Image (cartoon, rainbow, N blue to C red; front, side, top):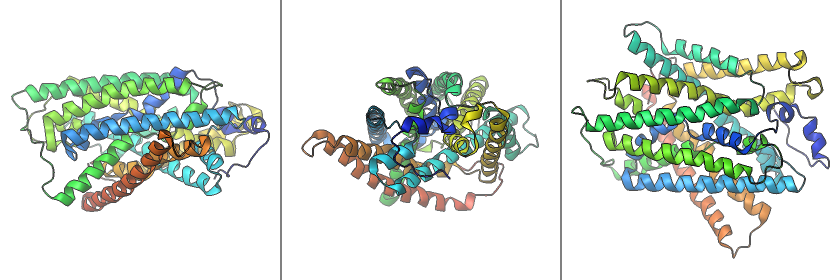
Length: 452
């Protein structure tokens, strides 16, 4: 495991001798490259769960939570970017979330806390990307060969092989073209899904609409906090410092431009997917709106070509998402195994990279095949992982770095966000774990169906 950072009077020398920094987090990017990376990290197929999140909140609270969480995360990421810029100007350029937190907060345990949460998030997303990619292949296969014998774990193995090949791209910066394609893909499948939902809502086979919430007050509260955790997970990324590290210095102002690009895409896709899906299916919305459009009983509610293209676009973007969230793990591997003096593609560095990254992807693929019930885990990941890293720590880091006066509005806004989202994280964790326990009887290791 990586060691906690120590104060170094010569930080430039430290970075130059760091293979993780030199190879994986090389700083060559433009602001629009950061925008591509951010969009891939935030705007993914999880937006297809937004109608399901609205199901636990209703129209008014759903819109409110989506808007508030969007504004808070944009504000949060902007503050973190400012803290990174401040440290860089002070001669302490941080390219890793864990080192930034440990430096600003002055606590060695914070280094391990961040690396633990980041590892949980990144590995979880890697497993989820492979699992959902396998499910996409299975959907296409079942439509082409309804009586076929291939199981879900076999499709997961196929996706894992592709991910092993793509994992050999050496640096975060080398993903910029893939992540630009990812941005176009998320726009593509969102528009297809929105069109399919509108078509389904206006068709003669349109399902009856019911927007009522849970009848029990306690169930309504638990469902609401689970939905908030899901939305938090959708807006979260947990790797902003690593993304900012890919920018060519000085990074001042560049990250905000990248964030504006990302949130323009997020605004367009999140609201359109949430509104169109919840409008059609109401409280019968599935955790994946594509499944609502392809009910087990009755005719499909969208043209086959539209659904087929959507599944292909989702599958391709999942590969990009898996790559983005693997970069922190690859950076740690490279830092420990590579020799910066021998070059990125030297035999000395190429062989360990091939072996370690392949083993990591194989582990994620094995876990995806063994535990195909990742839908229920997304709320837990949002509450336990994304809320601390994306809603709480950035405010704390800003207040500790800039030390705003207690009489200023900024101080109280940041403190309020910390308090509110600490409570939301605790309640969200409890309600998400509760749902996981209630659904436990549906879980089956190496099942050929993904549990919602």
